[in-house]
Length: 350
Image (cartoon, rainbow, N blue to C red; front, side, top):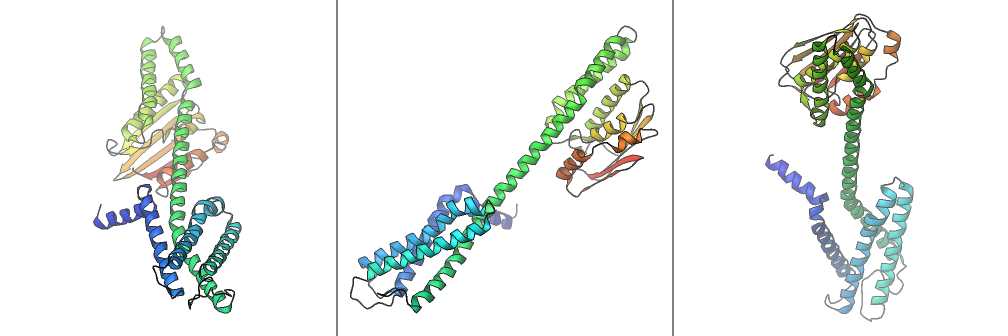
């Protein structure tokens, strides 16, 4: 990480990070006290150490902080973040007006009882032209300050929502992988075990090979599929074991898998290709299923076609779940082409 990136990360953490929360609040309170001190000094020709000046400073600071914290912890969470924008504007405007009117009354009460000459716009008759002009100016200034402070809160809320969305997508993908495991498992595995039992006496070698391949499939599902990504070589081995068992179950089914390129250094998400292969295999009876992997640099090409298939069943197949998973994993760095003849997938390696 470069120095600029570190500085940007530190500033970002200071704005919205939990560990700097206390420091942000202390900085905000200190800033509001400074603003309140400047306002009371500009409005009143009084000794800064007088009781009235100190009391006025406290009142002004409390009013400013009340506007900010009411927005941060009440109005923004209940209205702004829930997209009730009109209600938020109305309540924010009303709260600022009420609090500044309260400030005007408080200053009038504080300074109205002394006989010193003062330049405060809140004199005995604080609802005069000068007071109204000052009120409009202070109101606009409050909105600008409030917008700046709320921007960090909005940024924090957006990051929380984005993190939640990312977690939901990740959970969804994990559930998709689990569903893929289930699609491969129950009935199909029962049929394999049943066939293995029937052929154990007639052809013990074929029965033994099928059980070994079945154990490899189960091991892959149990261990490798729990990872975010696996070697392409392992994924292809899983596909070959699966199709071999499929052929053991359906004697008229045949397949041919070829690879072009190095599959030992490329990673892919587990069970990425098997849904496409299953659709093609389920609609290709008494035919040969051709599968080819082409690896060039960091690009993976996948081609799956059959010399004969049930076009009606193939056209009615649902590929939406596969496309959603590809969009989440690869965003715009993949191309999926599905037509009546073949399935072609091109994507960048992870």
